[in-house]
Image 1 (spheres, rainbow, N blue to C red):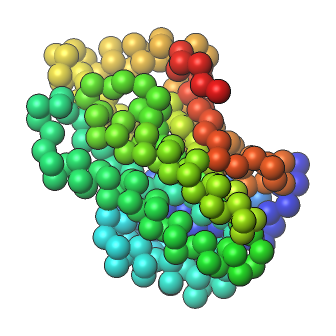
Image 2 (image 1 turned 135 degrees about the vertical axis):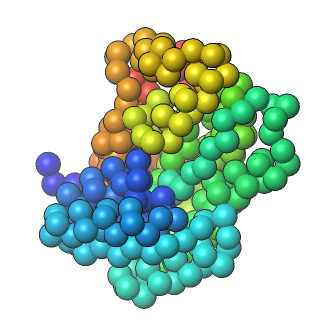
Length: 263
């Protein structure tokens, strides 16, 4: 299927690993040129090489999105390199898996900076470019802790709920510039980060990590962990003409694990 994205440009934060890498590759498969940022040069270089192997341009920029100066440099350098930005996928993430009484103010602040504030700041910076070229798409990745209680992931819950709210608030503003803003909530996705979360849960409960994985998988009606490419497919939909009139929405890609009724 032609999603009409050929030769357009996407910026993906946290684009070198996990969900971000899956998104970057999925968009590249549709002919998009992709600029990614992340904190590890080796994984940035590898993902950029894999994107180029699909026949499109790729640019990789080291950045710590908790720092405003890094965000500003990424957007400037990426726009200078690519000449435009049609799609922004906000995906950068951090995680502190711990009970409430072990979480410090600094850990809450850092998570808010990496996730919520970074999303706000990058959206603010790319919006004028999208406005100038007549429109664009912004997709925010915010985990299922926006909708569920997860006792060992409270900082995730606070920031992801903020991401969902920001998505709705910002969508109303950006619409005047023909920019849509939507959110994807990944369920338990098979990434390095979620495996670290499972390890923390296993340690807290004094059980084997395989038991945690088995329990989490059993909690998913479709019976398997989500893969990064599953999240990437939802992002692709929001970036495509199929979603021209969809904005301010949040969709869960969770294999049916959330029992809440959201409407």
